[in-house]
Image (tube, rainbow over all chains, first blue to last red; front, top):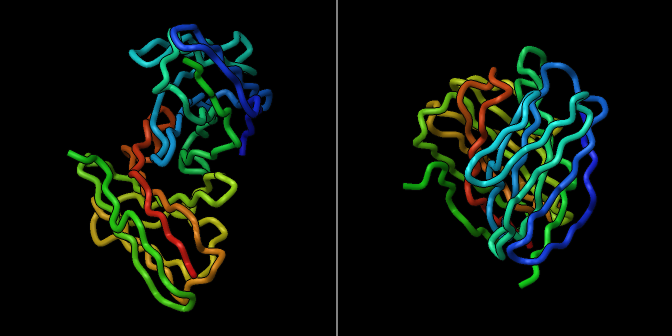
Length: 114
Length: 115
């Protein structure tokens, strides 16, 4: 399984942007970069995903390095509701035995201060 | 409407008992999953079904048996419960598992405590 490396924790102040980094140096050409988050006592929630180009949606932006060996999840204005564990995941092509499963790492615990 | 629903949300039971957790999704997805989150908060996949067919079976004790009566349901039955089975179990679903860009939707989890 392809692996990702994230900082264990990060802190931010409310209303400020947050940049959550992720390294995935062993990414293969067909792996998608997914970000999920898990709020306290809830199931993981999809945030964003991309393959090569930067992506934007209503929740966040995803900046992908040109060599695809790293990516950054950007929360443009953090709110208290964004406090969660953020997981950067490489979703493997379903052509092999992985069937496109998500393999979660430790994630980054994001704390947002008022 | 809840997209992926699990029941029960909380379950406390004694060692040696047999219990089931039910999962239903109303998203029309072909693929469903069971994940386990232990006390250290690691999320690990256990099983995945695609159109009622088992496609992923990680190293899980035989006491755990998934059953998919139809593609909208994936139930998890656990025999002879042990203390180490205490965890949060998440059901999830996605469109056909062949799309790496597909989103996976998770339920709210079932908190199992074995005493």
